[in-house]
Length: 226
Image (cartoon, rainbow, N blue to C red; front, side):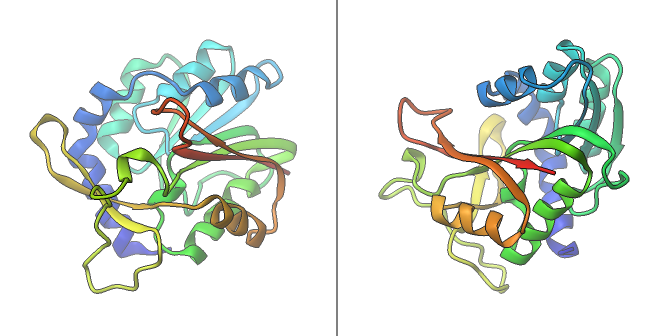
């Protein structure tokens, strides 16, 4: 686990937690479709649950939910807004659940905050570890080639003196008068497929999605299977 980057990421999310919660209330369509396809009352882990927008969707469908995040402020928001569920302060690099203990999971817009290919591959394996046989995990990352990062708007690479991989970037959170840099690794589709392959986990499906644009994919998704 890259502890210095985890500490940096946690400090950033604590700083932007309130602003994030004000603007991120609607669950994503691919997540809703995934949750709707699960057996009734599945035990679902929301890894990197933030303010709980996807965990709430799962509980509203009758699923049992475990929400995990490293931001205390975001977890407090999730606990306050959602009836039921179990909420754990933890990192996705080390999920505090037993092997093969979960029916399904969601890790939406989380993995791209993990720095380093080797670290991300380990997180993919960790997400698969907690699934029961036959379990499914929906994972998403940001695309490198999306309109918001077009010519003249490219995010700056980290300038902290550490090794920088192609796709590593600081993406500023500027809402509500804030100016907080978030580490994000921006993926090409080929790179996304490669890291999934290197993790040696079963892959049900990999696909691009346009969530914040009309037709230009801005996210890549995958469903892992155990």
